Amino acid sequence: MELPENPNKDNNGYESAEKIILRWDSTASEEAREKMIFETDRHEADLYLHAVDEIQRSLSNASISNTTTAAAVAVDDQTKVNSTIQIAMARLEDEFRNILMTHSSALEADSLFDPSSSSFSASSHHELEDDDAVNNEDSSHGDLLQLQLQHCESSDSSTFRSTSSIRELDLMPGEAISDLQAIATRMISSGYLRECIQVYGSVRKSAIDSSFRKLGIEKLSIGDIQRLEWEALESKIRRWIRAAKVCIRILFSSEKKLCEQIFECVGTDIDDACFMETVKGPAIQLFNFAEAISISRRSPEKLFKILDLHDALMDLLPDIEAVFDSKSSESIRVQAAEILSRLAEAARGILSEFESAILREPSRVPVPGGTIHPLTRYVMNYISLISDYKQTLIELIMSKPSTGSRYSGDQSTPDMEFAELEGKTPLALHLIWIIVVLQFNLEGKSKHYRDASLAHLFIMNNVHYIVQKVKGSPELREMIGDDYLRKLTGKFRQAATSYQRATWVSVLYCLRDEGLHVSGSFSSGVSKSALRERFKTFNAMFEEVHRTQATWLIPDTQLREELRISISEKCIPAYRSFLGRFRSHIESGRHPENYIKYSVEDLETAMLDFFEGYPVSHQHLRRRSQ
Image (cartoon, rainbow, N blue to C red; front, side):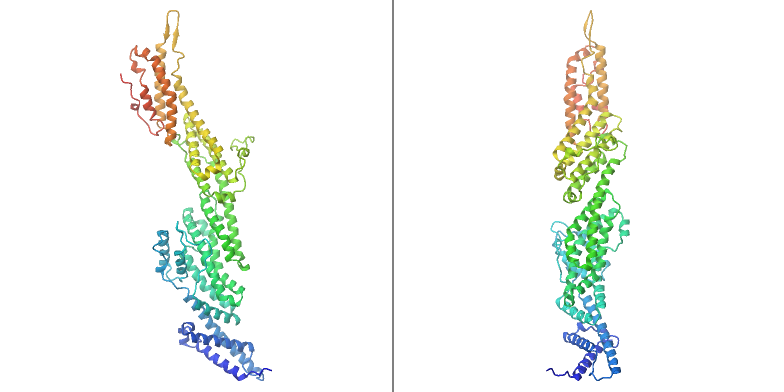
């Protein structure tokens, strides 16, 4: 049988506790306003916590006196207890806030960077120094973050080390966590859960805001981001990717750990509520940037940064799901997944629009000298970059391009038969289609040259450039395939042959024997007048070709030399043979220098002027010495 409790003992305990509570009432005592209990000796903090416990017991017993107390007195006593507990909760709220704020600043700025780390970029250092100058009043939760970044920097770039997986930091010392836990337990058990969560979220959110500023994450709306010039956005995307890894894997995960450490004794729902109160706003701010990019106006130059964003977010998604794993944080997980999906769709859309833009590229002014068209350089450099993102795009590009057919009769779209390209990935088919469309456009542009020879040279130059770019990229060559590469090689060689025919067939026609021989009843032999005319015609035609085609340009040294050799192999032997057969007929007459103006060596020298891209004078064609 239990002994009855001594009511006087309870009364004495309450009175002692009340004295302690009232002694630290900041509304009634200047000393209480100036001092914080948990910054004094440990004994005083323990006394206060015990006093709160005693008041809570009195409150739960609903009385501080024996059961025979009059009802009116009991009501007065209840009011007195409620007033005391309110004073205690106000004090604990202040103490809770003070401990949080005190232990959000633990490191000196000088310790943030590792001067021995050659991988830490000077620009990143200066950028963060600038942020510090502007935000020197910030809580150094950001400083703690920066210290971690010193150890998280990549050894081969200016990205962070060890941000490939979640790394939880201890944001506060164990003693502070124990004090916060003790305070939170008493506030929550007294019905002050909302106040506790609000104070915690307010202080920790401010710390996260400080870290965001140090990481360069700006408070921009989706509209603000979409109004920025793309050049400005590119640098912000690079910084966002770097910052997002730190935010998810270090900052948010560490905040989650801190919530669990403080609130683990009062239930998982409460620690999750505090975590979401702290990070939901910053997380939305973080993801709003990627969302704005994902829904922005599409254009070809955005593709690669969008793919960078996609790859970064895809890499982070498992960690986002791990950090935001509760039901209350489902909206964060959903937002991240939806952004990822929109980035993928944007990449697919940009590729399709790029193909259409090549087909529609309207420039009609021929490039001087039949050299490589700017469109060719742009497109081939672009698809070379596409090949660098092969692994990502193979997963994103799942359908074949929308092409023409040789049976469609549509003259505005090239045809491409997939049966000839069986076994290739949709991405490879898109790359081949881009080259097909580019060639189709170039064929149209070649028609703006008045000289057919120059039109063929233009096609030769451009298709040769396409071939060289494919050969220069192992990834691109693998996707395009050697079969299609041989087809392209055949095309530029055919263009070279067509050029030679268009230019040199008529020139070499002057060196034929037909029409030079005469026969009659009294004499037979060579018609000197016809021969003179033939030499004059050859000289005039060669001079015109030399004058014109010296200004034409073949940028590739090897291709230029190969074409010169091919021309020489046709022209020089023909001229040497013609000269050998007929020069005596000219030299036996008057003024032979007017007809045999050039030696074989003169022509060989003149060939060296071809396709250099600048005009030459007639002195380059040396007169045959007498």
